[in-house]
Length: 188
Image 1 (cartoon, one colour):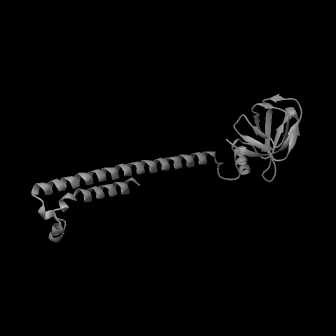
Image 2 (cartoon, rainbow, N blue to C red):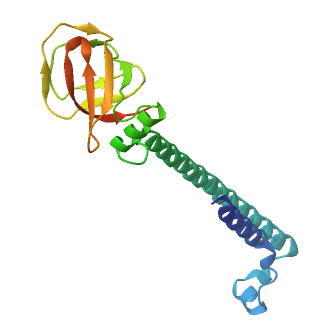
Image 3 (cartoon, rainbow, N blue to C red):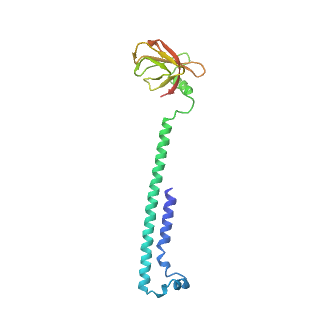
């Protein structure tokens, strides 16, 4: 984007810089029609200098506007790139969450009959509905169905996750005697 704008400014500057010499190079009939034949050589030189000064100011103004427009365009591009990077970082990796969860479990060496073990971040308290569970390993899992728990509070209880059938997972908290279906929300 910089190159076409710079080329345009240089072309404009070259065209305008030669404008003062154009007064003497006018066709004789136009030179007379404009009344320039009545001017002395000093007056013609002063006119050409004035035209060149005016053209120089115009070129400088166009260059400033071009620089400002270019800076604004670059700022918009950088903002769009930053927004796209943030969106890409925030977006889940490709593939459905359950598929990524299986890959994560496989990477940790867990087969269909084995469980992944972690601990719950924070305290397990009374809840009702679909609760999300943040684990110490950075993963977040959410209950698929409404459940409730009204037992004692547990700080950082052990959590076990095992793959079920058809992309489901079972989360088990043995200390609280809980077991329910969950889906992955964030896997790290």
